Image (cartoon, rainbow, N blue to C red):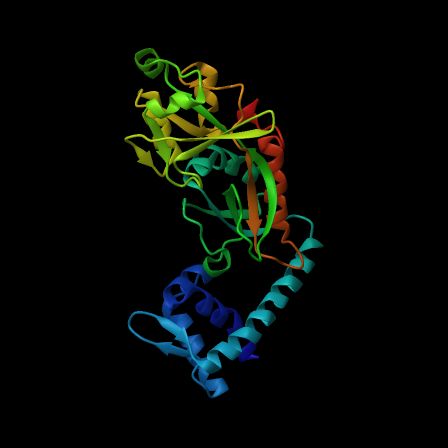
Length: 301
């Protein structure tokens, strides 16, 4: 029974790559994690981990044990999820990973409303523009935009992701408003470096895609920082509408080439594959879709 009880700890160590990150994820001390793994090795009579001052790695026996322990741990969580679904009210700790700008602008206002509706759920939200390993870092949900890589994760669309080309009135007054796509090559085009097509902007009209190669003197990996540069008249840029919407509505930014559409993508909630979706995960995703407004989110209205 002690061996079975140690499985979640060992699996977490193997997936996070160390005692410290495993302890943080499990909410126990590093020494407690190390002690349980050592006890497990003594009970099994084999060494499961190579320990160095820099990192941990699985031994051959550890790899074999991990493959079976991982399946057992997943089955135990599925069993727990199945029972919790019968209890009605979603509960427990929900770990969420989300991009900086979307998280600050739209998830941060959502969370307090969600917690009032579901008081038995506690939230641990990490904002980071880098793609994280959901399973390895113990996240229940990640919010991601754009194209998703082929993974074992499950994805559910929570909102459309549209972009708009825009500039400030002061920039257009000084440098003129381009009326043909080709004229963009003569303007200072600000670049969002996390875009898939960083320096090639696409425009769709009558189901035909037009692409323009652009250049400029400023590139940045954060949409809100890009917005600030646009507001101050630095150049022309492409922003997601969830960032630009309020400024366009108030006239602080002017949309360009409205007869074209920029290629649209989607915002997804992604989560690890589970036989039974935890009630807390389902509750959050359903709430987010309702809160944002579905296919026409409030920032596009």
